[in-house]
Image (cartoon, rainbow, N blue to C red; front, side):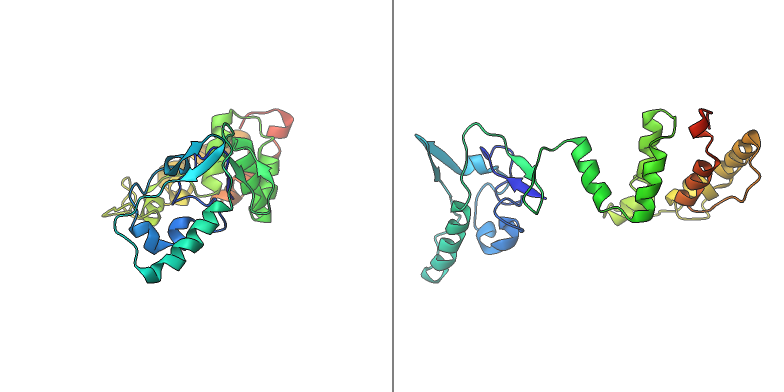
Length: 224
């Protein structure tokens, strides 16, 4: 996804992708290093002269003669995009289709890149008769999007220890927290006994929820 420029009030000039498949920061790192106000939006890098947009760019130092052809290439690239006064900036798919940024549109985009096994699971799961917050939590767990310790470390959050603080025996993964930890295992065993399910327990979160979906209790209007 990339931005389609309107007034330029929402798009970061250097950080966002709005001229092509790369941000200007990635395409022209030497220019980025030599500019002021690196975190400003497009609309802050120029002004309107009647109905014509004029770029105003400030540099930390003067450019050498051998650098000026590169500056011209940069200016030609940003001039390919025309700002439109009063029009909102919107997201656009890479193949050119406009898309207003909504929760549903982003969900559909993510579903398009979702593995087929998870896609089928979610199609069945959304029909389960539980409160929306529960559905949302399960959706995040299947996609491993819950901010537990092991995931925070993967996101470069510094942590001295990612072991489970309750048992100290395993890393705090989503499978451990919701499936294999002894307390949650006992809870699931009680749930299975309550609904009369004597099947095999699963150690993977998706297989675990798929097992309950196969019981089809939700489709009969019963509560899990």
